[in-house]
Length: 167
Image (cartoon, rainbow, N blue to C red; front, side, top):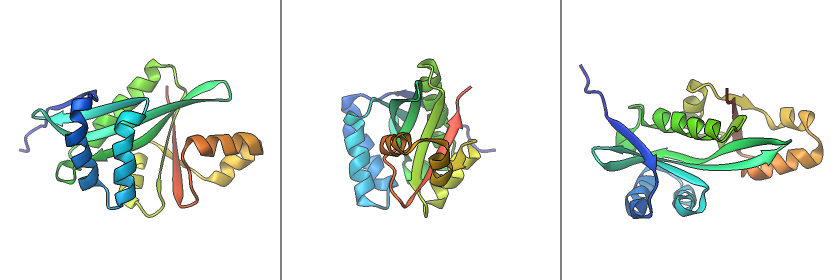
């Protein structure tokens, strides 16, 4: 029987920077994503780290914004060291992010990822996030609201948008 991991999630501290940066550079195939994720460590509203045996093995970076008189959450980056992937660490970080935003009374949590990033797409879908097409959003909102929303999602044309209603 496989050993159950003891995953501890806590708020990021500046002394985590070196370890968390190493995780980012291991986790991303794209150097730009690794750089932006490293920037997010101190630039995001809230950052949570996952530890196993007191070692940082995963990170989720969170932002929020107001849209149509409701608070919305956004997952700026979520990443786990490749040797620790598929062991529940990412899902644990995601649940803690949802808990954080529920505590702030956010109604929705958004995430984006590249169209070709099938592993992350499957991850969000497994965790009950709905893939929302930009054309659906454009029909639902005015042009100005649509642009405002995409701007807050750091969206670009090669992205897939995910949404979960927080209850």
